[in-house]
Length: 275
Ligand SMILES: NC(=O)c1ccc[n+]([C@@H]2O[C@H](COP(=O)([O-])OP(=O)(O)OC[C@H]3O[C@@H](n4cnc5c(N)ncnc54)[C@H](O)[C@@H]3O)[C@@H](O)[C@H]2O)c1
Image (cartoon, rainbow, N blue to C red):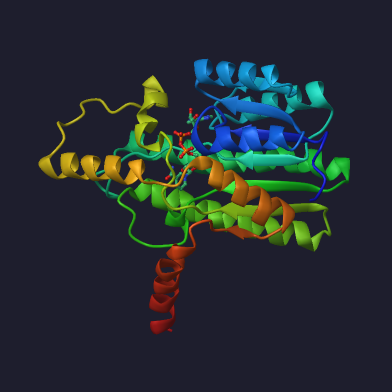
């Protein structure tokens, strides 16, 4: 897609980090924006900020894990702007550790937001986009963890691999019917956001009952993560890559950190070795 002015972008997880930068970038392109997030105060604050700068922005409090919430998001988008041209299924969280040490609540929460959130977004918005019968683009946020092996959180890795698979499947399905909709999957490495504080938005019903005190190893790891975050890529650079490589060039895979190529190659080498 080339000329975005006057078109409409829907962004989930818009109140922070990568989503916030995607929203600012879409406004900079002259688009109308629909900001969706579970975190009410920063969501309202961003909407006010963008509106003050002259953008046409609405905010919709949305839990992406709930299909009815995504349906309401679509209805409000159509009421406000009459259509949708870009959809960013971006909301995501991280929790838990190994497959067996992660609790059922860890699994349920992470699968709900990272995987079901993207499925609900696609199931709700693709029929609307098909009906519009004009160019549109969907960008799903996965992670480099969706293309490689061995992330420290099992549920995070599983959901991100699933988002890569979902997007590949979506691209094929859309191509088969000659739809004017394109799909891309965003797979960044470390980005300076609040992803390490995901627990702030965890629903009460999915909190772990008795959280064991952190082990020395966990404390060391958290410290390392804080250091990694300090030097991580600013989210504005990720938004630039999404609009350039994804929306404008139409690439299926948006991999902003080119140095991660070796990790992706290692996974495929391991697969090929066993053929
Ligand atoms: N930061 C990184 O290093 C990194 C790397 C690769 C991929 N990602 C992915 O980028 C995406 C954005 O994360 P971020 O790094 O900007 O983190 P962030 O925590 O700064 O932003 C995530 C946003 O999602 C929102 N959110 C959480 N649960 C939600 C729900 N149920 N419904 C709607 N919104 C919800 C949060 O309130 C927050 O505003 C995620 O999918 C994450 O997995 C991040």
